[in-house]
Length: 325
Image (tube, rainbow, N blue to C red):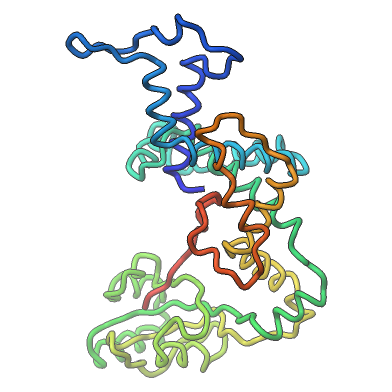
């Protein structure tokens, strides 16, 4: 779920509580309860509620309904919430305390620590509920292996400007010097401080010369001659050359990748969410917000070949990694 949607959800929910909108009836006192005065003009809680409903009502209500529907369909929402809390606690420890963690959240405009916990919680709900709707039979996983799956390659590299520099570094490696330290000292690539380590990548994501260098040697080996590309000269250490292993040996890894691909498939997830909302028989009594989930329900009933590019945002942002050489 996008962080802006979550922030609006939290803000809108707070207005509901402040204004008493969750009560069964509105009172005259509520309508006249001022929260600000500008000159001789007043702003009431009702004014604020109505304005926020107008600005963010549909997307906020849609998000709130989504969370309720996901919780209804989760095996154990309490466990997923605890997992979210534990995950955030680990991140807080990693950065050196809640104050520093909050600074990072503020910098990235992710709201408070509690907001972030809720984002993780909703992501966990989404992943669990949608995963239960995915065909995970052996036949489906093997079909994915045969027709779609590409093994990931992993490598470290040192990038320099000249062939002479590259040859000198290879001589240092031959003499027993550490690849990681040489990368930190000599490489001009952004991966230098990670010892030249790149994120895993698949065929076609790197320039051909680099990919061929990774594939052309056994795991653990480094190139004995510099590899030239448009970026300069590389010394490549292969961690995983991407050789496709037999299905039986990597079935669990293939299954995980398949599930991840389905969770990131917006069209697939929209249809599932729409069907779950439809099954929940959501009733919206506010005429201004009656269409909050209409698009999702409509999408659930569209043929599979209809694009969902313009569907409303409801799912957690999928994190992705990109590699560069």
